[in-house]
Image (cartoon, rainbow over all chains, first blue to last red; front, side):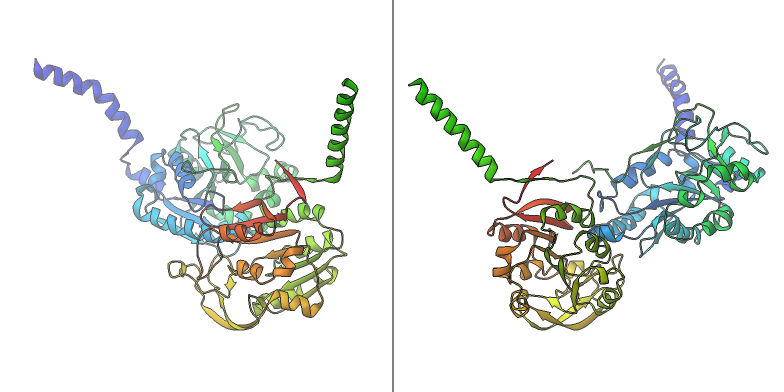
Length: 275
Length: 249
């Protein structure tokens, strides 16, 4: 009798155990490990009022690391320099960088992360340029420090799709619903060459969190960035994207009318819980 | 009796009108979008006369264009002790429009020659001070270069220059701000606006802390208006002569 209760209890827990194995300490197949090895997860950060605390960085990173594959990816955190009008934040920012170094040693989520520190203020694109120099994988996931991932996405099929279809150059997670708007234009589901994940073709270019080919960055994006500024200033040109979409290769992840994948907690206004 | 009461009431109204008329306080809205001292210059310009006399301790390369726009008729004296930054100041393309006079001196409580500590290998290439780093902060203030600079006492300098009053003093001199403010007892009586880098901890040896700066300025009826501070670290504090503005939020 006792054994049957114990067995029934064990079997009732089985679905939970199976689910945990997928969502937490997932074990990967060889092919999956190979796909993981193709991506470097780059986080861009810059001085914000909540420095020197790493709380916001940890919060946002945690949402991304719910995708088990991302926990195993190579990681880079790239620090922009301090903008001259924010010079008074320099010391707190330097302590923040130190705290990140500590985080790498102590927090398993940040293990094997390389830090790239820009001494000068370069804005996101040129700051990212320094990080890209350190990348030895064919793809990058570029994540800004204050974006949370709202819901999981299919990492493996996304990478498989990029492997198989060279037209997919940049796949962005939308902070709005996947609908036509003034930025993305009349998005549609015309995917040159097809994909294993749901995508929408967009005619807008944004540096919000996205997957991209590393050589797309080195050969197309960064050469266009001719001074310190936001990438959109150099790449968001709806008419040019429409005319030359093959070159831009930009898509939104998800179905038409699907809700946002990103939530912007905005570092400019983020307040630490302890404050 | 009733007439007398009405008369007193009228007198009261008249007194109130006179009171309001005699204190025309300019509303000073502290804008939350003003993240830095550069933004705040526009707000300060509304308070100052059109031809203010300004003393700036520590060159701030991003402010010269705005200052030349805001105060084309002002008189601005800029002190910069770091030779490299002084060269940059000399080459500043906005300088010809600024009606400024520039000096390669450090400001301090007494005139003379003193060591000046420069840190070149941090995220802030502008770090330099007469004060050496406190031991627990020397990883940040590396003070890897030490030079000797000529210091000026602002009060003595003002006498020599026949400067009687100053409208706006802006100090960002690596922790020696309080020493300088204390060294100018006559000028401080005349000042309308003080924008100063303030520190919550003694990052450099002998650094004047924010509370000390505030207490000192309050003795002269110069009150704290707003701060852009990282708590427990550093930032900027804006002080103004009492009665000059009415702060609105």
